[in-house]
Length: 518
Image (tube, rainbow, N blue to C red; front, side, top):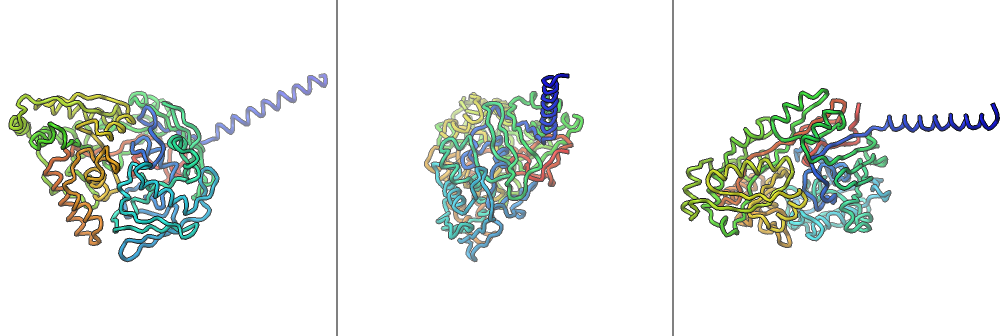
């Protein structure tokens, strides 16, 4: 063999070894493939977005001062996150949070109290937050030093820890990255969570990678491929074929039963129950008549909705506040299903032949069938809903502009009545106003009770006020609560979450540093 031939053989061997090593490295990389029911992400800014696909992704990128213990939604199990400890004054108006030292943002900068102050002020600003009205009782947010944050309230807030937890406005963004990105931050998020944003492919996927500097330790998953698969059939096929490890499930009994038959599949039905309600614009020329709103309420068969959705994945709604929330009461005037009563009320209101309304609705597969069933129910009494189906992000944008007289919204919030009543029924939360959140009804009849409960230090008195608020709003028929839909996911039995999965307020299983693939 000549020298040149020998050298070529050595190079070829080295190349083969290099390719083999790279292949081995790729084979050893732990990649979680997550299929979500959406055409695309909306906005990956935690202070703006409230959609299920976005929230499930954001929980892996961001942290709060405190967090819900993974797998739970109980306020009693809130634990330290970016703050290692906190104290509150006797009157509940001053809270001091001591931050962990050495926490790094995904851009390499160390997190300090300045980032927290920036984030909470941002969350309270209607120009940069969809949840600004939640923070109206914040008087001051200060940084006495680099590792201390002091929050001074105008009034005590019963859900304060929920407002600084890893949910919505409580997610802490990294100031330098947010200011540098500006409008682009919504597609280039930077937080302190276990996974870092790497890449966004429109209408395809978001890729996250492990945060090696995560303060709880480097994650056991190396990369997460968060895939947008809007079609239920396509997601199911990919999951059955082994192309997905974790999948957003259809919230019905058929999907649960069918997926349980897939080899190696586990089905998780978890809290919270998202309350599906029909929000009625009480200022609308037709809906302003309470007889019409009562007719709509009497036409909705809640038992039939549960039968349609499945007994293991849904339950009847009992009030305009979800079941189990602190302050929830089922002792409220919930109108029963009664088609004849509905028809009589419509006739009395001057609509003997019914009427037609054009409404806007999302194409999200977990929600559209619900609206179509309600459409069929209302058709029986002569109410014809013409549904304009749009992409999910467009739906959220349009309903917040007050463009749909009837809105179907399915939501779960921090489990205290204050948050739900404030966001959906307080006057300052009315859509298309400077302090808008999600009050599509234009009702403000219970503002006094909602505000009084917020500053009430006696929990029993606060509960009484929340009950009165629910009674007032139900009597006015501001909305028609239908059913609560639990969260449904399928995953392969080689995926270990690292905790007991019972619930997630982010509406998707938390992927933590402890999660791994066997």
